[in-house]
Length: 224
Ligand code: ADP
Ligand code: ADP
Image (cartoon, rainbow, N blue to C red; front, side, top):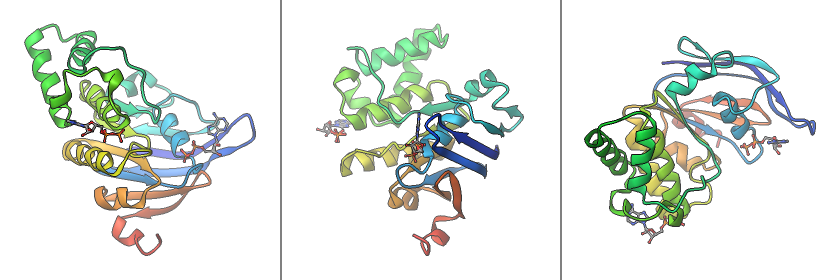
């Protein structure tokens, strides 16, 4: 499993250079992208998820040329944006069952099993009967993870999942990431140093659209 990013550049129409000839290679495991507000984290993640196009550069994921073949990428990618989703007034359990149906799982027993599994992994099983529209921010973030796990993605990208969460909910969320990181490749961005220290075996520090540091959290501690 390898994600390779080469010479990626993005300048917005207002003249802000969000990605500046960025190079990065990411392998299997839990990867943290650390950087202050405005560093370019969301721009990078949206570009990998093919939500937006860069001006130049290339991205490959294993055999997939990401910028040329968005459909192939989206089959193996789970992306959770920073903004909370807008959800209908439906219980988490029913909504996930509905998404599983859209995915083409026709057996209701199969759907039940997978929905139970993703609700347990995201620690939402006890609140499965509650409406997602009434969930707190942290619960919505975890619901977003549950939803993308239905597709069994090879690569999961999560943009600043802990921003704005209170300490208890932040810990709940990090525990969920730790759990899914045992059998998925997860890339997540954060401006909180402790998030990457607690979770990652590999990290990069981004600022001004460039990678300033690449290595392990232990080595990085000197710099932070
Ligand atoms: P981060 O996620 O690290 O906070 P962003 O990628 O959101 O960084 O932003 C990087 C820079 O690009 C910032 O200066 C931001 O203001 C600017 N920017 C982000 N999105 C847009 C946009 N759609 N249009 C113009 N400027 C943008
Ligand atoms: P916020 O993210 O808005 O700061 P929280 O998500 O931490 O708020 O908490 C909102 C309420 O939901 C709290 O009472 C919390 O105990 C409860 N809650 C959150 N997640 C769960 C869960 N998995 N099971 C049961 N209750 C939960």
